[in-house]
Image (cartoon, rainbow, N blue to C red):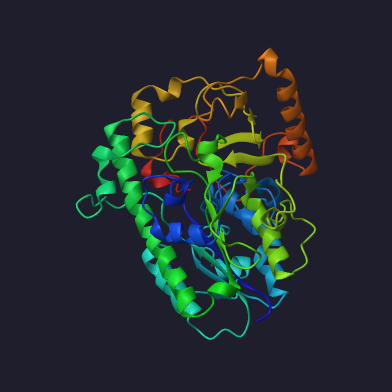
Length: 441
């Protein structure tokens, strides 16, 4: 086979909380991949919520361009499935394969029929324990064509399994550090200990697939891209445009120079993956792609790919339109709903959410425009919007965001983003989520 195989292995709600990024979350298989490949320390999702992020890296468009401004299981769908990466690759002779979760077709739809995958691997659920064996069995088959596999691992989505500190001491909640920007609270320590257990399951799946690549002799001819869709499913993380919501791990290995245990610090976006695949495979890049191939960075032709990256939210549990632009130094976020309080419904039901609600989270003020200095304020907690010392920075970033919205024909420019026919969201004033309408993003 002249063209390399491609595997997108994506986990759910993991952010950067894995071992190669220095966290006490043992993921030895991802660590192995990092030591053999390339780790991108400053990778970002195009959206901090599930379906919009996945639509972006699978179509190479931003969520408001692809139509995926909300969650697929709440009725959103791609407005043109032919822009999904599989259709570009099928035309170049690839077999396209899905295993596990992808969230780009409405709930109840067959993903293969709705999007167009040629083959869906049999796995009981999208949990790691089933995805790993199914993909591994496929890799051991005789392949007459190059393949693209989307392996969507359910972990680290809630509910988390119980931690096992007796066998795995780092899952002991007594000695666990909570994620930023949350308080050190026993309930959140317990939640993070359970997250570690879920991450262990996810990493086991990664290891099975890497072992199968080795055993089948496909490792050298397969570009493996491992990443998360967005930040942790903890309060103040997922569904926020701070780095807690959009910062993700991205570890790659394979043809194109993705080797050697390298670490890249340049800012990149998951929307860069589609053009990278085109570059590595020699397939013509579709005209609609918004990202930039990672190869010039990998080959040393440039020191950076982007002067800035963009991300967005429209709907999660409820309507909460936000857009942001991020550079190496600064982050500018703008809200478009004129609310002055936190919208609690857009935080999934977790122990960290309960802790914050018990401490009057719903009464916390919220700014319409935010500017953060990421060097001196990496938690993005001190809003500098309106600070005269940074007037030029703020105006520049505001102009960049406006230009991006115009270039991508963001529907927010015409007013509120409408619900697609058949889609649904929670009432915007809810402060909690009933079990029958719980957000599973």
